[in-house]
Length: 407
Image (spheres, rainbow, N blue to C red):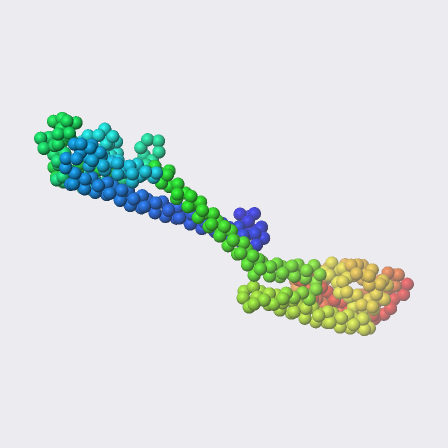
């Protein structure tokens, strides 16, 4: 994840927000699709149940009112009437409806394996309807079945052979398995089939539309959140970062960021502005102090120098320029040990002081001979003190002339 850690905060926010929204989008899509499927399944069951009940009611009604008419008009046979009503009810729909029976008279009413199994369950009297998705043939189907039970009027054609109308006996001889039903016995069932692809086509269409709308909504949310994030968080933080970069590069503490509402970002901006004011004040005070120190150095009647442990000169006053015989520009960076005739002894004393923290000429006044660039030797009394800057030791030496040497 090092690549992610190196990204800018705005990019990180956009990636994380996008991931969250995509997860929410997919989760919502899943639940919407499940809800659509459950709704369509429920509608399919309700519609199939209503169709099956209408067919059964039509059959029962015809069985109760029709007497001898079917002998002259076969289309008035209750079974035939119910079949034709089913065809009309499901015309131009995805529903395929028929009446099936284990003891069928019409070969078209012969049950398939699924219907056979359900009719046997119905015959045991435990359930009166069943539905579910079944793999039959090339594609899965939604199947629904509602049991039909024999009533008294049904026995006129399906009771004893001797009691059946003549046209029935003529078509179905004695011993046919469609006779000898009893009242309440399962005589068959209404079977409804719907191709699953057709059943869920509407759900898929609705899901696509829903996903499109949700996707556009999530994109809009992402854009708005990214804009607000940039406006309220990223831009102020970038302003602070840019100001710190400029201060680091220029050393000027005059940058200020326009104040913001007093939230966390507003507190950060206010703290930055206060820090800049404090740094500007301290820098000004330091500059004034250095200026005063420089004036004191220049007014001093003795040579004063400040140097590092290795002897490199970093501060020189006017008297030191006269003592060493070089201007300040050429003395800066030169080693003071090269001007003191016993410079190596001074160096050794300073190193000893750095090791042990005591002695080594620091805090003492000692006499030394200083040789200028032109060879002039001057006897001086040197008072040496130690200070630190950025954890580096700085040594300040006051070189008071005692006796001026000659060539």
